[in-house]
Image (cartoon, rainbow, N blue to C red):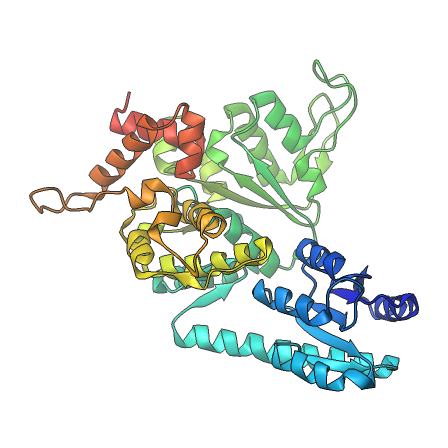
Length: 445
């Protein structure tokens, strides 16, 4: 819902304007003082602010300056008496969108909101065209300059129109969950629910119950009946994250659903029919899992009608700076301050790092930089030590080393400087199960 903040110490104006904006479909937050307004702005991030110049504690101009300093995209309309028109013009020069002289009419408010909508649409179009000229494609939170990834997004958009199962593969943190959300949003099921099931966090019986539901008394602790995620997603989409972690019994039950579109809750005897599309994701090689006998071959083919493999961040280095800038702006808005960007040393450190945790690890690094930086630009001293302390990919003799060697060394360093595997996995921005497999692969015991 569109959100607006009204700041005025005149209760009549607050009430009248609030009622009118709510009738127009806006969510309205009000504040009677400048300091209350700044707190409300930080908490609610409104798209539009109606701001009186004369407030009981600080001036409207001070509030405007602090709002603009956050870097948030918000349109500020100054509310002013005719006697302070000159001040209102000064406010526009400081970044206000326009001013509204008292007394104003509902039609004047609607006209201003219509102007804001048109300007916002034009600004968004300019940003989109600029990004296209730079070779950047933006789909929600999915931003890329990579031709390979743009081609994958095109496949995903085409596949979204069907009801076919889609298998998303790739390393942890490459954006499989984000892409699943986009596919749901592009699909004819967009108005229906999208329900996520994390297959790594629950034991076999609990995962079965979470996905298919159960009846009261089906097992110890089942004190009441529960509707499973599959039924909750009726008319929508179920996203099975890390599907390879399912036990054989749950795999068999999922296969039956994909074949018949029906399932039986745990402890029940009556099948249920549900219209839900299945999207699945894994960071493991499913073909290898089939060969090893830990994943059913027939289920693999049912899930793998369309497979989309997202490349790791190290294979699309052109996206590193683009994504870093995107999330810097986002975290800056959330925290009320935005460094203007990254200095050259920081960008060089980001570019040299192999990103074993992929986009998820990059997001964590940017958030840390935004929190700790006290300069206009984020420098290498603001980034996580594992990034700035990363050795050059050349060894002491200047011979290039393989990515496997670099990743092994980095994981070993993180493990040595953390107390638990969970802490190491969090720093690497991968799940503990993935870290365990990498430890085994690289024999880091």
